[in-house]
Image (cartoon, rainbow, N blue to C red; front, side, top):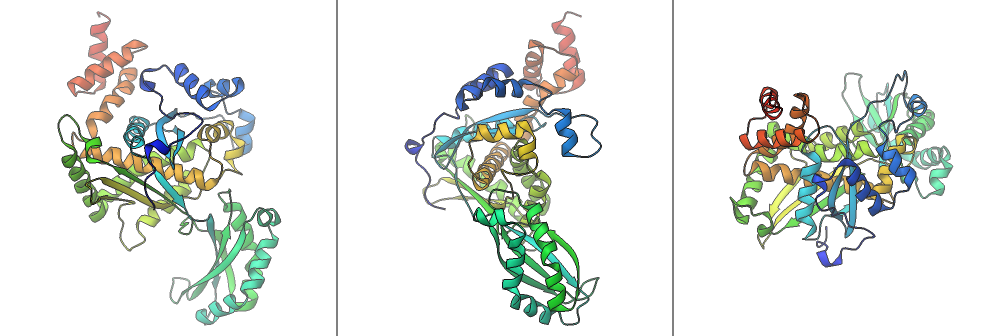
Length: 439
């Protein structure tokens, strides 16, 4: 994946390092982000508006609309990706996610940040052919008709072809036995450029179905994309010196060893891998949601990818290089887009993309994977030392304080008290609130 970008090579129109962001008010954070990325007054107002998605727009996005449902929108700070400063919008309800990603990015930024890359944005559309007595013969018949199939598919989206995309090739997979009997499944391999691509590849699959039936003598059933986008991969890597991971309790070598030992369980045991990978998705999904992309498709593809070797395993890999540095890397399918769907319909999705400053779907995908890797590093670091609950519950304490009835400055005071006591409960928050109010 190449060498890590040196910190001295980092350049940007702004810095993703917003000092003391945690202690700012929401309005102050919004002002800092807006100043950094150059948001207009109208865009600032939109971000501050709890009803930013107009009901009329929501009614056009899905069926049977009765209202809108908001989630907290936070900004992960400190990210440097391929030498570029990036502020990352994250829509998520879980405490500690934004803080953990930001903290790991702060450690990484002094050592080159995250190095990323991507393959071409190739999506698969599947055309299922059944009723075959000779599925291998059908495969060869389909491959012989490859040029006609590709031309017919591309005729359905002249604009995509004009933009440099389009159907590139076909594959044919044979299943000699299935509950529906022998079948051949043709895959259209389509470069969808800056789109997620579902509508495009589905339309192409339907267009070529008559050809598949004619040349094979079978019957076409399913004509739909695959969310296992194993040709549309995004990668991220980070390299952290031992000393940068040291804490008051543990030296850097011990921290690296602890992280590697924690990773070893995820690489070996599917019960741990499921939670390990959920932590990775904690970082990736909020960025996917904030940019109006399909987080369910990303989840499906990522988990299928994690099981591609026949058993479910870790999405990430953690190693120690010859110099003793901790090296983390990840490669996962990442089918996201900048055009179409909610990315264009939802005003906050458009603003999220502007804040990130991404210029292509591949660049967006790479930032998402970098955030997932940062989140994974944060979880492993916590598990290797104090355990996951200390930091998580300290942040969760704010929710508990609010649930107990605290308001304003009371929230932070009670949350800090409970964190110090390591006793984060609603009844304890109520006791502390009563004490503060002299009840």
